Image (tube, rainbow, N blue to C red; front, side, top):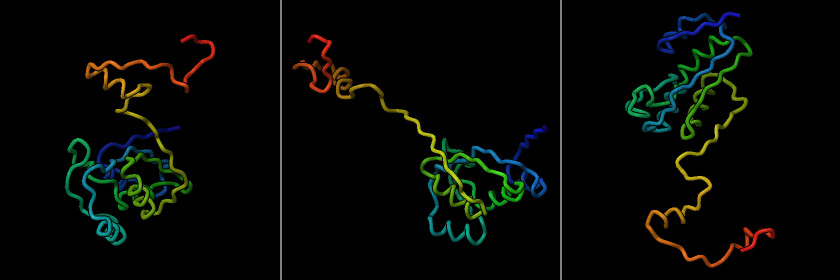
Length: 156
């Protein structure tokens, strides 16, 4: 089995590939976390031209991340895929709807979507009110065990 990795600008690389020559496209595309364009203007442009110029910057100020890949990009990926080939791409939670719409307009059928659920930035297994009291140097009065957390084998 032969594997080939193409590097460079994605559209340039895709345009150099022959039709129906790729088994799968797997990509971690830009999430487009910048300021989104007006939805109606974007949709009209996507339906008419497959793309719309987007100005601005996305995550960490990067221009390449200003917006999700547009239908013109996905059409090239669709063109190079063999019949029955699959595309797997990641999307940001705030822009996954735009990513799916872009893929649909490009000719892809959305079969399944997987959610990558993760928690960050919020303390787990912690009573936040107690942590706030501790940080403030306050001490709580103990009034007895919780009736919801009573175990018969413990003596209070």
